[in-house]
Length: 318
Image (cartoon, rainbow, N blue to C red):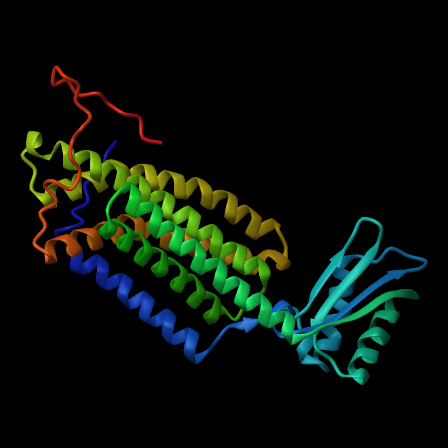
């Protein structure tokens, strides 16, 4: 089964959609900003264990929701509650004053007597280190991707791949800014996952472009026809892969609980944006970059896959 998309013919339309989404995401990022969680801004941690009863997560959240009417900074979007199998409860909240901490502990006592095993403070300096580490991780990942694509294909392909990745990340970040979800360390994990997932789809299309460029003269294709044919041959595969992945992501979103919301929503939007960019952004950028330089890509990949008798040896691309 093969798609029948005219990517190059409608290049302005597809790229315009991406530009609008990216611009809106950047505006949201700078106007509304991200809701940084405790990992980045600092806060308080309470580790406790109830003495005579086993308290459920829903009971704790209901109790803290009532208190949140008085202390908005501990609302459901700003706090984290974890309960281990042995009944140990870990509560993370934004930084509180001493009186506010006493109110939180007093409120939790309404559920029963407990032993406070640990009370700690996560400083904002740790948050700054996490931000720097996140930026370094993304930067190193981008550099390695550029090197890999340049070595395997050509530099114009690397530019197309990186711009499509930036497209995916910016849209995902813009959505999180719009929804006001708390940004924590799993958010960084989601962004790095998007990098790997999106570039995989793009590499598959690039591989097909390279192979079709070698056969271009035999097929009497123009450069535009070659690009369109390459995308059409791989588009269904990309869509099927993305849809299958989305089933799992949606299942986790429904049954995974509030603590995974930011991670899963970032992944969901990133996969959708990545599927779009690998088909409708990466290839058009490669085409435009080469067309602008007057490069018809005729000799970009020399076909050295022929044996001495002139017979073609097919390769399985992994």
